[in-house]
Length: 268
Length: 72
Ligand SMILES: Cc1ncc(C[n+]2csc(CCOP(=O)(O)OP(=O)(O)O)c2C)c(N)n1
Ligand code: SF4
Image 1 (cartoon, rainbow over the protein chains, first blue to last red):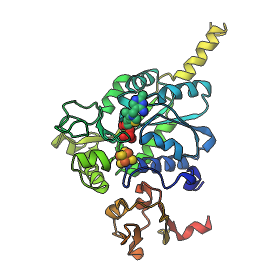
Image 2: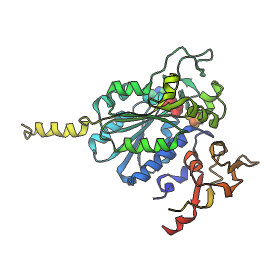
Image 3: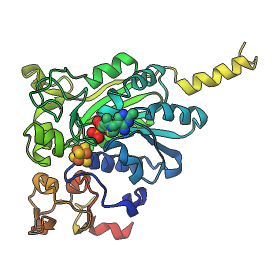
Image 4: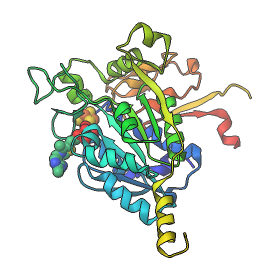
C-alpha cells in the first residue's frame, strides 16, 4: 500500500516545526508498518499529550489521543479488551518518563504486548521548552537558564530494570535502523521499548546552541555508536545504539486468559 | 536486479518547510533549497535512488519515483 494511504492527508502540512525529528519518527513508523504488511485495521495507536503525541492525529490507524502521561494506561485497557490488535504507543520523553513514569515502569514490568516508542528530544516541546527528566545535567532549558542540575534517566537501563523484554535505541539520523527496530518491536510478543533520539530545534536546539535540525542530526551521527563497538571502548561518552535485550517471557494478556480459565474451573 | 533509475523526485511543495535535512544528507548533493527555501532538484542526473531524502523528510514531502515502478 502506498505510504500516503497511511496518513490523514487532510491534516497536512502537519503542525511540527521545520526540521522537528518527530516527523522523521512518523515517516519511519509508516515504512515499518508498510513493510510488515499490516492492515490499518489491525493497529491501534494510543498517545498522550505533547508535540510527539500529535502523531496519532496524522496516522490513519485506529487512534486514541488521550491525556498526558496516561497513554499506556489507556493502551493497556485496549489491549486487554482486544488482544488481537497491535498497539503502538508513541510518547515524548516528558509524557513517558516524567508524568507518565509510573505507568511506564509498570507496563514494562507486566510485559504486556505493547510497542512503546519514546521520541526523546530531551525537552517539553509543546509547552515551551521546560527541562524534562531526559534533559540531563548541564543542559539549558526555559526553566533552567543557569543550567540544569538534574541528572537524566537512561531510558535503556530504566526499561531493562523495569522488565521490558525488547529494548532498543536509535536516532532520527539512523532512519533505516529505526525502521528495522520498529518492525522487530511490533512483532515482539511482550512489552517493547524503542527510544529514538529526536531533535527539537526550536527549544532544545536553540537553548543549547546546537544549530539547525540537520546539525542536531549530525550530532546524533557523531555521538552514537553500535553497542559494544571499539569506538565506545575508546570514548565512553558515546551513546550506544542497537537492541539491548530481546527475550521471551510470559505475556500479560495470554497469562490473563489462563487466569480466566482457572477461575472457570478448567485450569486445575 | 538492475540499478534503479530515477524517474523523478515527486515533491509536495505545500508540505515542504525548508528544514534542509534532505539537502544536508544527500550523499550525492542532488538537492538544494531554492530562493523560497523549498527543496529543489539541482542535479537529478547524480541521484542514486537511495531514498534517504524520502526517508528522512520530517514532512513526508519527497518521494523518489524510479522508472521500474510502473511495471509492478
Ligand atoms: C496533566 C497535565 N499536566 C501538564 C500538562 C502540560 N503539558 C502538555 S505537553 C507537556 C510535556 C510535553 O513534553 P514531552 O512529553 O517530552 O513531548 P514533546 O512536546 O517534547 O514532544 C506538558 C507538561 C498537561 N497537558 N496535562
Ligand atoms: S516545539 Fe520542538 S518538539 Fe514541538 S514541534 Fe517544534 S521542534 Fe518539534
